Image (cartoon, rainbow, N blue to C red; front, side, top):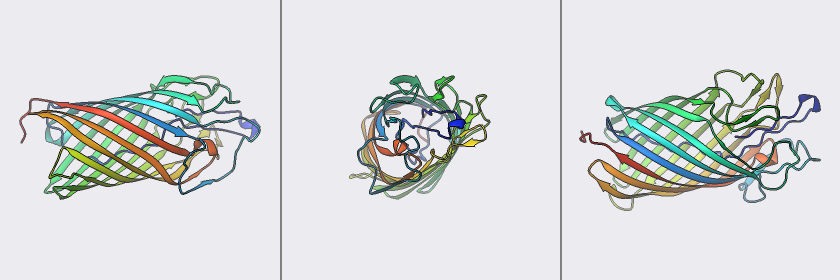
Length: 305
């Protein structure tokens, strides 16, 4: 996220998200002890543009700065993630995004220019349990403030402080051809940054299914619905009413495990996400769409139990 803050004395504020508002995909898969999964994903999203915003979308308060040019953003994000399997269903992961954000047209807001910056690093611990065809996973972690913060003009590439992340996943194998999945996530700051600007809490839920044309085949088709919520940012005691959103999105895509040998495999994933319905505080934080593609390499020497 990049947030742009002006003085509360002007009775105006702005927070412009450069991301696509993605949600976590359901995953209750067990990573064998000693196995490593390395993945790189790239995504492109548009927020605040004139394109598709859903079958219905609502701007709660209208344009908070009608006399200023306040564009949305196009962003490209490359995220590298490492996942390491531990005994008894536990696993550790770490990931960091690199973001390139471009305003859709010249902005009147100070600091709203083309930028490339790191986002916040995430570190996560996960525990998975399977019984018959039903799997559950619990996750607890933190976001570390590696995201770029530019003092003086409120430009942020992250939350600015350490945040806590919570997650719960569930998966049920209906048949060898279909698996239902649910994921919920929540992120919140542990404290308020020194500059007094606190990025809002966020939460999300994803529900849907993965289908394989062949029995437990190499190709999986994805179809999910996403619920996204973000509260209001705060600058000191001032609540930025123009920030925040609630939305329902549709996500579709596919996974292809195109190479596998013993405990090694490579999987390609591509997915697209679009809003179906959304309510936002300002038009330039309304999501248009996002497209993501990535490659994951799994390798290890542990025997399959």
